[in-house]
Image 1 (cartoon, rainbow over the protein chains, first blue to last red):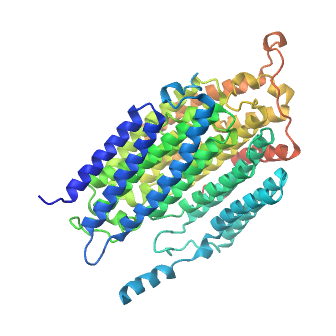
Image 2 (image 1 turned 120 degrees about the vertical axis):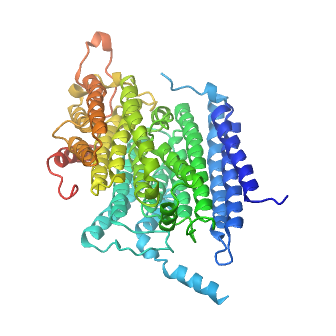
Image 3 (image 1 turned 135 degrees about the horizontal axis):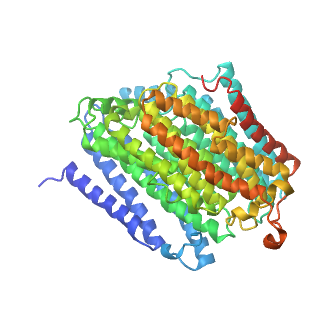
Length: 106
Length: 501
């Protein structure tokens, strides 16, 4: 069996769904944060697969591969800011559980 | 090798950095502010003056360029098709700089009373504004995503800026999860569009599927392709998180309440306007071929957004939550304008833009008053704090009345004309049921806006009320600014100039 575009897309789709469900269902902020990164990873793998399989001799489709580098840089920024907020919140509230962060409900 | 060199030289020949000078100036000055703070400690006023002065200069120069016709509005694509200057894009750039000036001023009012870092606030506001201004002209999904994330990540910090308040940090965390989630959906949508539109199995695959024009051509040829439909829907969902339309509005009340008041204003006005402009550009540009699917989807969303926003705002007592929920209702009315644009009403953008201007003027007037009334814990701004405001501080009370009246759409204020323009556009697009729905929503909105205003007018018995809530007396600068905002809301209601033609 040769591995084709469909297989890559299936893996990336599963990763994406796992990420979405993780964000929606998990309560620990760090796990939610990991799930967010999982969604970005799913996009990255799909991008590379599309670039590889849609390429023709006339058009090498490098745009998708270049976009991956931008996504990685953005994900790093997001992590840097996000972890800083989580650490600051932990110092104030001693919890990173979303179910307990309901200070503003009326 | 020669062929590659030629591609490179064609690419670089369209790199006109000079045409992006407003963004470059803002970003450079944002960096300079950090240096100024380092070199001149205890220079609060200078930080404000530099950031305001620079932005007013850019604002004035952009308006002069637009009026004088020196801004490029031709069909020239810059940066190999990544940037396309358009007239509507220039109008939005001017709008974003204007909002940024007001946010910086409100930020000064907020920071003045709190032991927080100063320069970084102006720095972030200016960087985010520069990214928004870029977004208003971008026609390429790679640049689009990078600029959008610059805005989003900047907002994470701005929302969590009140580091000494657990409410602000909690709001920052919630905004971050929401923002990351929406970016993830949006990115996956972009990737699916890229993959589908670049696929050689389709009719006329695009050479660069990230480019809006080429993507639009492919979509017009293959409107039924499932990957394209899912991708476009995911992109729209990602943007709908930013504008807070139902069912993507659940983050709004908590984030609006916890964020520092100037950041709430920034979110409510600039971020939302940016989302609407992007929606407008995408829906009337590359996604035009998907009309048969997208018009009903957005139509249903519009009904739900108007209904939900108005009903939810009725039950709130915290004024920031009222603003948040009423902002959802405003998003619904703006979506009506987007629908009209999708159905071919050619002046729908003018209606949307005029609505955004009046919404910004009225909102900033209200937020300006909120900055003065807010207690030390910025998140706890209850309606009770406004008791007796009209009597004790008639100026602030008057500005609040004009702002809320314009938001509610009371004639002859600007908000009334804006709502009327959207309704006429919807009428021309034959959205009769939606027009009726908007009118009901406007009537309901009068209840909660006037509930707030009633608190400001009533003066409960001192025995019940106790001491009146302490209100910071407005300085000369903020008096002048608030007066200008309120006056503009009145004047634009009577005379619209060329804005609606």
